[in-house]
Image (cartoon, rainbow, N blue to C red; front, top):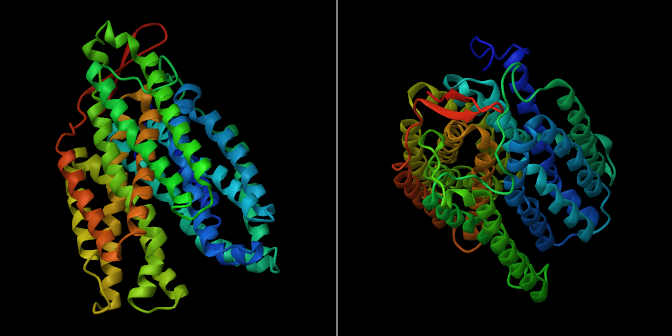
Length: 489
């Protein structure tokens, strides 16, 4: 399956070359996806944006990522991560350039909406890394991929304001954003020329059909349809936030059209899933080739609580520190950046713990820590010493991001040929969580917001009891009809 030897992070050959190129590709996607966040002040001034319009840009930036992760997961399984990542990086540079050239709110809004697609890049690397690393190293490798790549958003926050200042003038931000697009385009070529989908001699297993996730029992088919609902609900919630009831970017008529459109797409999505899976209604899948969709559903719920809360907290933490402790926004932003900084070690740490001590046990401990961490943050008020509040946030951050790493230590062990689609659905649930938590935040106090996250983490802990520890082998069929067994323990 892969070259032998331990994880040597200083190596740039074989599987380690693939790991390094994968996390760099993911790093660039997040660098581009969040290239507007640290420059919002000057962008708003340059384009004459109101506060409501700035908030709208933030919503639009994550809207397309939910369906994009599902779609990109399917394409990755069908066409391979080498081609799909290269195309995604190249195409995503275009709305990046459009945003850099925007002259008004409408142009900026369209570019930001389209850039949400680049947030799906994460899914591609999950499949790539799973092809190159054995089960006993997979959690650590996926954790490094996710943690180091995720750091792209923090790197954008640190580097882009300086870059904009270096160019200077009213167009400094445009140059900084444009450079991120150029990096994206250049790396698409580097990626395509330097990777292969599998190690030499290994088979890249593809789904039998494209158009929906394969399941292996009738009960699982109906379970799949139920698990699709929250993704459409999140998109409907985003539409509501853009309607006159929210920031008033869309008219009532347009919002109603979008609601009907989402309902129609959901019906088509269910029909497409049936077309992919209709054989299971007449002929049972052999036991050897079955997998339990329950495993996917549990991971979806956990990623909702982990990555969903991370996206929400990263966007509100500077303001939280500034308001509760009456700090300057720059200082508050610096303190809050430590939350994202933890990704460098926490996410690989969660994957390593999974490899070492077992997938389910690690997730149970981290999810309990996550619930306790957010419950503690709900108690923070101005009477707390600032240092203690920051330590509480950092400790909570460890459990959040280690939990993300532990979730994606399990994803590639469910069904190899469907890894992209499973990663896509689980990843999309992270964005569904972010939409849910940010909507809650817009309606309640900070204390209630943190309490709600703690409560959903406790729900995740209970759901997690249903997860089955991956054991033994999973079976895939070669093109010649022979069966290959892939170790999962």
